[in-house]
Image (cartoon, rainbow, N blue to C red):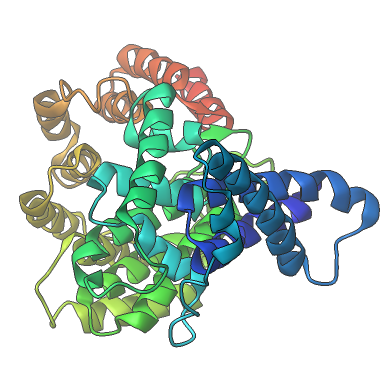
Length: 399
């Protein structure tokens, strides 16, 4: 299967699933049917060619498979006749994209927050169970069970495929889902490529949809601004051979000025509206980076101050780790290492390669070449991203 075909199928998958659930319900079985339709397309389209309406083709095949699966299930339950009496569960709401409606369905209040995020990443973002497990820092088997239980819970809830009346209550989970989708695309946790541009683009697309739906919500605007300001650096993040280039060494003339302008405008307008939330603060930090002429001219004290406000709102260990780096840049590596010692026992950080990578960077800054080399090698052994491994090994080799 070609890369272009894979991207097309990933883009169509949530649309097809949304169409099936809207028409027939049965979220859990519909997801299985869509996966089988995608597999059929991956096998047939390279041979027969992509149909004129690929989305329609997938919906037709998935609908037939859904019918077969439901008939088999209903036969076991002695309710075969129900298939003949299906009724559509509602038409699209106000032109809203089915993918957006699917997002809110996956964030049904019957699910735990962790299950909401995991299910949406699987159904809407197209991430594999292994990728979602890494995002949650849990074993893959645990995530498999969580997703299966989540699909069953959606089915049991009897939820209709329409934008919910309580969408404000579900918004926090939806925003986190969209952010995780973008993050997996911007800094892929596995494989030979540092970035999965299609996933990052999908995250931005979903954030734009949310912003159109809720234009007055400052956190929605903050999330979109954060994504745009982060994605603006994408062309400079990799070298000619796909190797990672850290921000301090990036050619800032390659950053995308249109995305920076749009992101800065969004966060500038959102902050005064309040209340200030985590996404707005992270966007403000990204704006300070993007508007700095060079790494040396970055306003690190302002970034430290923003992280300290952010830490009052969230106990995210990665925020704490980024705060360590900012403190080291503003006050010196010894201050950063002292702060690192206060968080390195966090169970969510202990096995993550980023903890060792930050320690290595700070040790290198302090002049401890031997300690930095050992920490870089430790970080390389913990990541499953090949570009990250190559970068960390190269840093160790330079020492």
